[in-house]
Length: 292
Image 1: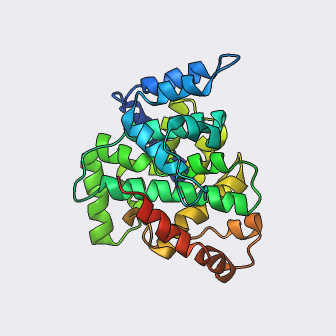
Image 2: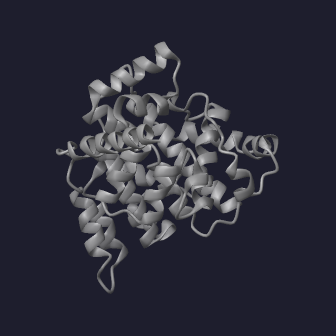
């Protein structure tokens, strides 16, 4: 017992040390700060918000792509940020821009171990699938589910960018020792990409429910804030692997947490797979729509 306590304490210290050494994280993007400040005003016009978002062309193009997503199913093309805001709503737009800003801030150059386009596709597909699944299962906020799905794997590009040597060792262990990525992360760093993602979300003042979803998206049964939302992101993440659309190699051999069956009221894995398979055509159409 004493040995177990000692090892747990050493792991905790190692985790704290790693996080403390992430000293050069990017500051919160200007557009994100401006939007937050703008929405604190008693009255804000659509044009004011559109003007701020329009300052960042990368964010603008992604917002328009999201608004025109087959998952939204809008009858007409959304060609301006003003119209996108009307369709999506002020507060939901803030959440989406915040998440997109976060994703942009931690982008790195593509290499053989992390293709940025593939990672972006996985993130956006998980986000949009989370939104659609949430709405189909009666969850109150599809936008919240979208944001949670979009940033669920934020810790992976952070590992790639700020702990690159360790990132390569993790990949090597997975390839040679046939370990799962989460196991290799713990062995090399003493923490997982979920913990790193949660740390950053807390640093950027994301709501507790989103921080918790990032931390628990592989084991939603551990979720404290909202098991239902975390379970939705979990099965959306799994769906990209099952349907092989927007899938990412870090999730190969994805393991379903049995707690989601009770939480989301699926009788078993076959029932869940039948539910997911209904989205196949939508996933395929979505992947064709997004090309960044």
